[in-house]
Amino acid sequence: MGVTKTGLFTKQQNDIANMAKALAHPARIAILQHLVKINACIGGDLVEELGLAQATISQHLKELKAVGLIQGTVEGTSICYCINPKTWMQYRNLFDKFFDSSISEGGCC
Amino acid sequence: MGVTKTGLFTKQQNDIANMAKALAHPARIAILQHLVKINACIGGDLVEELGLAQATISQHLKELKAVGLIQGTVEGTSICYCINPKTWMQYRNLFDKFFDSSISEGGCC
DNA sequence: AACCTTCATCGTAATATTGCAATATTATGG
DNA sequence: CCATAATATTGCAATATTACGATGAAGGTT
Image (cartoon, rainbow over all chains, first blue to last red; front, top):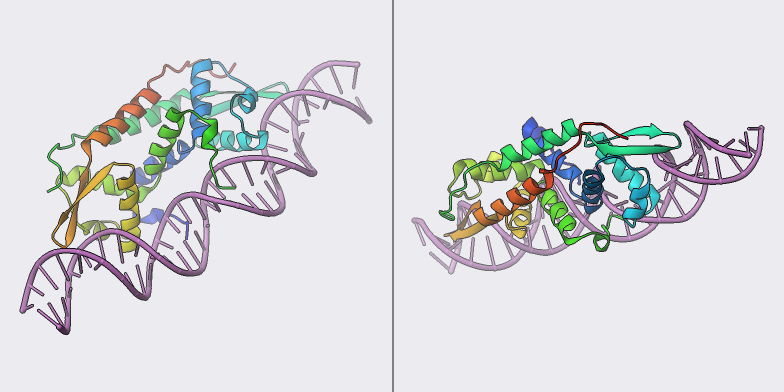
């Protein structure tokens, strides 16, 4: 069916899954890494940086904006993107908490 | 097209994206959380825990096994699953490294 | 042997994602 | 106003994902 039964799971589980989904494409990882590196913002250099069509990059940017990981400010005819520090920290904390469990080394059963 | 152009990106970027993809479904998050909590392994209690059909759970377990996050050992007619501590730590470290960048608070441009 | 339990796999249906060309939108400069 | 530049949106094609019923394989029980 391709449709996730979100009703079966807790809000936290759906949250983590949605965050992971936002990161589940190398182009979006590349965009985020580039923004982290350049610190300040960029316009459509991203289209040159990555080798994808402008329409495709725009779509990925839209998704990242939708989950709040990046923000864009209009800069004349172009748009300047940068990491949204607040959401970035939220992601970091949620994944931290998720992975911060002591796993037994004993193996199965 | 639905097909990711992995060739355009670095191995690290594809790795992170693939790891994120493994976590990009609440059922898989629920499975992992349950395994972390119960510590020792389980059989198909997972089918009862989550409200999904046996075939569906089996598919999710297969995906988690494929990326190495869990492992299963045969236990008579049932199979005992548990977290693979090694891969778990790898995931933890990769996400740690990814998010461990100082983000400027300055906003865009 | 016949039977049951447990899990994996196959086939199928519905929906989601990725990617791009074409087109629309918005702002700037002449 | 017109042309240009930078993004966004639309529409489409190809592939991927999610979910489940049905079936199959393997091990146990009687």
